Amino acid sequence: MNIKIKRFDKDLPLPKRQTEGAAAFDLAAREAVTIQPGSVGYVPLNVAIETPPDHFLLIAARSGTHKKGIMMANGIGIIDPDYSGNDDEIKAAYFNFSGAPVVIEKGERIAQGTFVKISHPEWDEADEMSNRTRGGFGTTGMK
Image 1 (cartoon, rainbow, N blue to C red):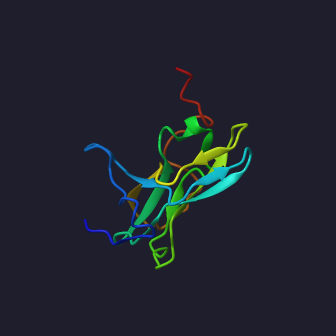
Image 2 (image 1 turned 60 degrees about the horizontal axis):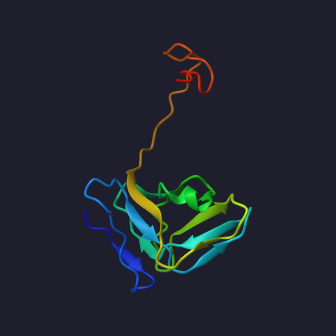
């Protein structure tokens, strides 16, 4: 699969998977960003990407990002296929839940991305569902 990508700072490397078994590729900060406690900061990820036909780009935090005291403010990012213009740099929004400023350094791998197939369902509205009611949210047990 060949993907058209534009780097805004060519001194930073292209996104890449860090291991052979990695499901996603890492994205790095184009510039240093300081996020104050209780605030949201926007980290430019140095790329504009044209997704493959019928796909979107899913952006998520790297698994260790919470150790810095930040988490993605919107949980995940969904980059629509039509957000791929010349100046459409992808950014990640991070919320600082710690009590101190958090610095993300230029070139730091701060997010990860993967392509997801888009499905367009047609709804078949029903008054009754086929499966039995399981209970409420989180009802599969505590163990």
